[in-house]
Amino acid sequence: MITEWWQQLIFSLVTISFGALLGYYLSQHGARLERKLRDAERLRNAVQNILSELQTNLEIAKQPFQSPLITFVTSVFIIYAGDITRLPNDIQDAIYRTYVEINMGNAIVQTDLHKIKWGLGYLDNVYKEQRKKIVDEGEKARQLLENWLKENDRRCSSAKRQSP
Picture 1 (tube, rainbow, N blue to C red):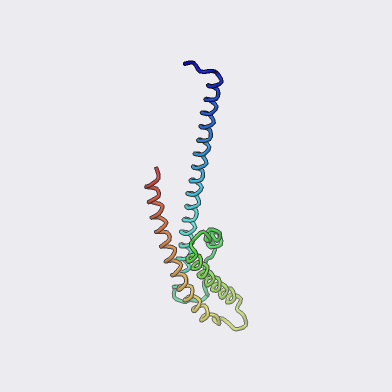
Picture 2: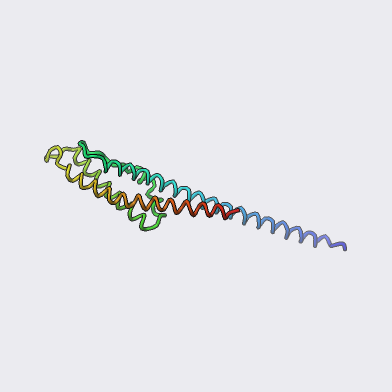
């Protein structure tokens, strides 16, 4: 059976349109998945870096007391502050509480550096107490972050096994 030229034209147009729409959908879906994976990797890197900085601060806080007072590190927290909001609320709360204590410790160090009229060593006991608070809050945050990383790694590995 010979078809009319216009029937072949319509069939070709429908086939091309369907192929173009399918190709567009698949490329958008792939881009969405890629963006999701990239965001998940960025969050994982943020958590690893914050955990590393937190561990450094815990080591500083656990060192035997010595003068001059040692400043705590906060640069990684500042860099990844926006990414922290994507973590569960309990982890966010623990991180923020820890860094509040760390910033208070740094304020004590800065005050001591200026050797106000009270004299050298006036803030030593205050700094010692602050270090205890940093250790208490920091250990909670460290444990939550480590658990999140383990859970995230477990989820990622099971998702990779399910994807084609």
